[in-house]
Image (cartoon, rainbow, N blue to C red; front, side, top):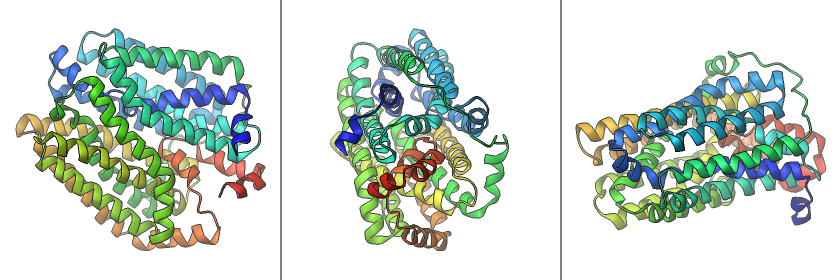
Length: 426
């Protein structure tokens, strides 16, 4: 496996490097949120719009990425996304107002949607040695990016709040040049996707159920991500280490914990347990917001539940959906990112109206509502487990990729192209 991982064309490593930087963006700004608030004289609710603009634009753009990629090809889509990220992350670093940063983060979200939705497809299509090496490389980039994002953000943010934005711009510019230079032209998919397909997919109850459950979960998740840094009252570098620990647990339990729990208990019980535990942690954060050690502990431990839920929920979406996997992925991404984008904004209003305890309690309630929605589809989750078992595919690597916007059709195509490697990987 190690030889397969290392024996890849330079183009694959160029895209993988860009993936690391892209996944850093998930937690990159967390350590600098308090600094932005104090230095730009903005309230936490105003700063929370960095998440809202980024995620809402990402959500809406997800609806059109398949339409674009099926017409201009994955490489051009990938390069366009990279270029947009470089421009708007640099502009965010140059901005002198919170409104400007919020606006430029929206542009960043557009680029991120274009990039992450095609990066996996490009890696699999360009990799040598088949499916196994390409997926392991993608997983390595994903885990490294999630864990390193807050740490890099903290290190650069300790110098200046502008540091993380300029850092992303510089790293993505390197990735852009390498991708343009090293990556061969990729043909467009055989079928052109209609723009309305992701929205029309919501007519199917199984997919709609999973999407609504994901919306409630992401409401709690991004409430924590957007507001937990403030009551910690830590420096940027200290916040970076806290969320670095969180990111490590997300990556570890996405890849190892989720499949073990699924095999041992089944998808539905594992999801109920993960979501229920996350709701309890959010409630504890809300009750003990003023107790720093308790707050930090709960945030770091939430990485366990986040990693498990991310993988199992997305796998279930792909299994229960009656539409093509790329369409299901886009639909799912749209709905859940809408929830994630609106949550920090509403949380800010709650803080302004009441106090900082309220958003976390509300987030816990939202996650519990997600459990109830999932429970209404218990039978479909049981059928999904049966389908997974009958196909002898307990591997969740493709679903991990989908959770962060990867192109699921690349997984299927690769298994057809390299059946031996695919069997070895499961």
